[in-house]
Amino acid sequence: MSNLRERRRLETAREIQQTTIELIQKHGFDQVTTGAISRHLGISHRTFFNYYANKESALIGLGPKIPEEAIARFLANSDQSNQSLKQLMLENTLDIEPHRTVLLTMQEIINDHPKVSQLQLVGMAKMREELGQVLAQKYPDSSPLALNILAEILLYSSWTSVLLWLNESVELELAFEKSWSALGDVTKVFMS
Figure 1 (cartoon, rainbow, N blue to C red):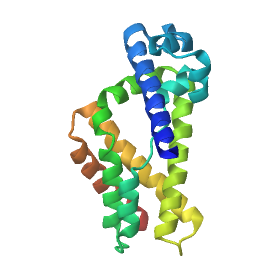
Figure 2 (figure 1 turned 180 degrees about the horizontal axis):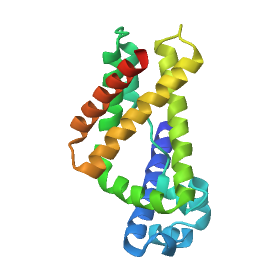
Figure 3 (figure 1 turned 135 degrees about the vertical axis):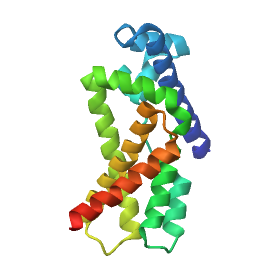
Figure 4 (figure 1 turned 45 degrees about the vertical axis):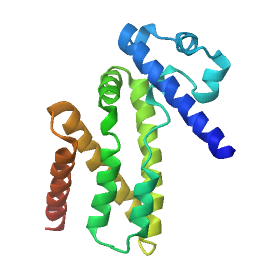
């Protein structure tokens, strides 16, 4: 039953986020209130605040998460090379593909509203922490500092590919390959 309850909670959180985005697209960020979002969904203010602290949080949503299936495959794979890392990050990046319209809207708002930008950074920090924990399971002999730096670099590379995809109309997988290749070039510069 708790799985059903958790799924329903995630669905409601996503519905609130989607409605927030739709209302912002239609009326503009400054015109949308938590009351308008709640009314549109037919939920109480209290219900809204059980999920999000404000409209900015509702816009960002629950934040990005690395797909559980990708994590399971990464951890189950005995390959310690960068190919398994690449596959994990590719799956993570491609997971965002169905959300292009949402991301474009969010990118516009993030550029214009520092509070939303700060919330996005918090979400990315949580994702870095999650990735660091996954890396620690795969590479238990590595220092936590090294794994946190690696997580930061991998996520930045992934985000760079998303920005290429959003802003330059490049296929997402090709954008990822370009970003991953550039990451290899950075490594060569650093090691020289």
